[in-house]
Length: 536
Image 1 (cartoon, rainbow, N blue to C red):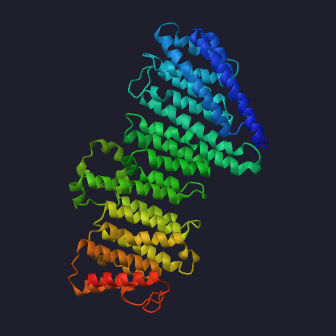
Image 2: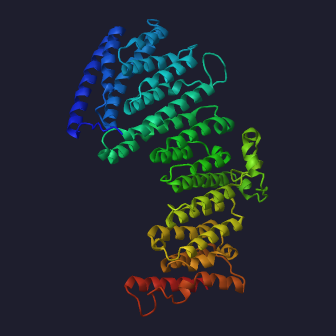
Image 3: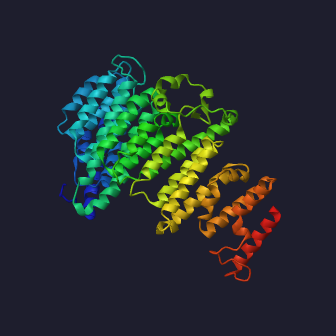
C-alpha cells in the first residue's frame, strides 16, 4: 500500500485554485489563437493547460473539478477542428499524427483523443484503426486518478461516433464498438479498484467515500453498451455479459462488485435478464463474501416483477391465458439455446412477458435457498428475499398457489428454526414479515384464496400481536371492499380464525374492554368491532 499522504485540505484548496488559474489563463490564450486561426499556437496553449492534469496531489473530488474546467475549455478546440476540417484548412489525419509529438503523455493523449474523436466523425475515416490506437495508447497512463479520468474522456468523446454496422472495412462495425467499450470498462474498473491503495491507511474511510462518488465513471461504460443499436440477445449472451462478469469476479473488490452487478440489472433490457439468469446468479455465488448478495438478487427479482406487471397490463389476454408449458428438467438446456430462438419467438411463447420455457420461480427459489445458508445472511435479509420472491410468483404465476404456499412454508420453517433469536423482534423482520403476509391479500381479488394456502394461517399465528391485527384489518377491508360472499361454514370458520385477533382476547395484547391504556386504544377497539359487525 502506498504510504504517500496527500496534502492537507487547506493545501489541496490552494493547489486546486492555482491550477484553475492556469487553466483559465491558458484557455483564454488558446481561444484567442484559434479565433485568429493560429492552430499551432492554440495547441501549445492547450498542451500547457492539459499539463495541469498531470498532478498527483489532488484528491479524486478536487481532480474532478479541475477535469471539468479543462473539459469545458476543450469544447472550443473541438468546435474549431470541425469547422477547420469542413473549410479545408487542415487535414485531421495530419493533425492526429502531429499532436502525438506533445512532450508529456497526459497532454499528448488528451489532444490525441480530442482530434481522434473529431476524425472518427468524418466520412471514410479509418474508425476501426483510430479506436484501436486510442484505446491502446491510453494504457500509457496507469496512475489511478489520472488514468480513470483520461479513459472517461475517451468514452465521452467517442460516444456518438461508435460504428454500429456489420461491414468489415476500415469504418469498423458493431463488434469493434463492443470490444472498444469492454476494454475501456475493464481498464477503468482496474484503475478504480486501485484507488483504494492511494494515500495513507488512516484515510481509508475517506478514500472509500470518494471511490463511491466516482463509480458512475465506470458504470457509464455499461450504459454505453446497453445503448448500442444492434445489440441483440446472442451478442449480449455470448460476448457482453461474460466479459463483464469475468471482470467483476476477478476484481474481488466489494464496492466494485456490488455496484457493477446492480448496474447490470438496471441498464440492460428485461428480456436479456430472463435468458441469462443462470450465469448472472452463478456469479453472485462467486462474489466477495462481504458483498450484499441480497440486494443484488432482490433488485433483479423486483425488476422482473415490475416487467411482468407491465406486460400483464398491456396484454391482458396474454396474461389471462392459463395454458402452461412445462418447467421441467430440460429448461436449463433450453435456456442455453435461447439465443438462437429469441428472434423467432412470438407473443404466444410468453405469458405476462415471461418465456414459458424459463422456469423463473424455480431458478430464483434455488438461488435464494442457497444464499440463505450463508452465515452472514440475517433473518431480516431472509424475509426480505422471500418478500421479493412471493411478489414475483404473484405477478408472473398468480394461478400457481403452490409457489405462494411454498414461500410461506419456508418462512414458517425459518421462524421455527430461529424462534429463540432476538432478530425475530427486529423492526426490519417484523416489517418484512408483514409485507410477506400482505402480498397475497393485495394480489388476489378475493381473500378466500387464503383458504387455499395451508401455511398462511400457521405463519400468521407466529407473528407479533400488532402484525396479526394489521393483517386482520386488511382481510376485513378486502371483504368489505370487494363485497366477497362467504358461502360455507368452513370458509366462515377460516376467515374468523384469520381474524381471531379481532374476535377473541389475545394473551399478548392489553386491548381488552376495561383495560385500555389510552383513549386511542379504546377508539381503535370500537372501530374494529364495528368492522366485524359490518362483516357479519
